[in-house]
Image (cartoon, rainbow, N blue to C red):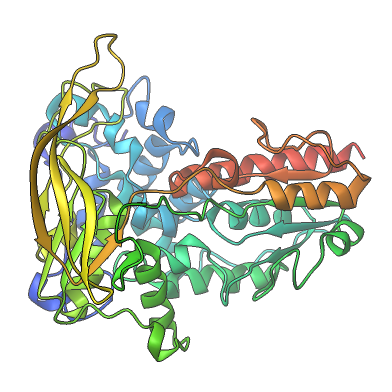
Amino acid sequence: MGNPKAFLTIHRQEAGYRPVHERIDDYSEVEQTLNSSDRRTQASRCMDCGVPFCHWACPLGNKQPEWQDLLYRGKWRDAYRVLEQTCDFPEFTGRICPALCEKSCVLKLSCDEPVTIRENEAAIVEVAFREGFIRPVQPVRNGKRVAVIGSGPAGLAAANQLNRRGYEVTVFEKYELPGGLLRFGIPNFKLGKNIIDRRIRLMEQEGVVFKVNTLVGSEVSAKEIAATFDAVCVAIGAEVPRDLPIEGRNLKGVHFALELLAQQNRLLEGIAIPPKSVINCKGKKVLVIGGGDTGSDCVGTANRHGATSVTQIEIMPQPPVGHNPETPWPMYPQVLKTSSSHEEGCTRRWNLASVRFIGDKNILKGVEVEEVEWLPAKDGGRPEMRKTGRTEVIEADQVFLAMGFVHPEQEGLIKELSLAVDGRKNIAVAPTTNQVAGTNIFACGDAVSGASLVVRAMASGRQAAKAIDNYLRDN
């Protein structure tokens, strides 16, 4: 390393967020950036550890010490060349990844000041775009064609890798624009959609074909896909949200989280929404059920709508601040996370289970909740929940359910494709590997693993592309 002792004298410096009073009235990205000099100084803090736990923890296997050193030396182009070897879209992960690498950084484990790996990654790729280091490549075609169904992070990574290997790739997307969860799930204030558009344009210039508003099995039949392409990659994600089937569930005002988030992103894209279907939180008392990132995104969106109040509740206990002895490294640290959305205004509560939705004339008025306790399991397994009988009613005009997603429902599509390929009706549809039962059908991302992180979906897409390449080289 150029400065092996920098970590002793230079503290972690984050770019931080735009002021609340400035960002609360728009949907632009809330995160700021450091200047190039400060960014290089932050990169100098990397110690080039003998065992780089950051590299080990990253699902993509990013070579953080290598590109940190190059960044510190001002070799931005070389830093990007190392970064792109393992990460197809650092402009995405550099903005929205929870940075598993930073949770494993030796400076995190020793003094709670990890290297700003995620922010450095975003800085490198933005310089690469700005300075023209990223240019379209024109791969030599091998004459084989691959269909990718779904254009989320897994599908895009698979398509990018296959295209670079010389395959003619067509990506089928059922919605209006490509991007999947990146486009219609993550708010613009975390990931500006111009960032997605920029990458899609690049992929199109390199030969990838995107067909939007195209639902495989409807607009395009499985038989047509099977007859046209040499292999198929299923990357349809895990879209079915976990419901809360309690009394009053059908009251007007109770929505899934993605109903709000996807609709808001569509409105910002200029996509028309029927007036009767518009969800607007202005002047409303909003309750978000679920304490994770999706719930936080609902909080930020409701605040931007002008909600009167926003409350977020979680059935689990409040995690500790800073360090949790119950989740030591290498476990993911379960600690209190305060997002930019929480800073903008939100009442947060824990240990609350929802009992029933309360309404008047079919319109939501509140939610009855009950306090619960969590008791350690005798066998050391998952804690046991105990109801306390202490109930209350939280007033609410709108409720957003942000409780995660159920197991992906890719079985029907894969069976349909399998039947079209070789007539088999019975086929394994929950593969532990990317290939489905020896056919030319492959799956990746949340369609295989269930709902997970964008970075894991991208890693899975890369693995699927490699498996498809190996298969087609042998057939």
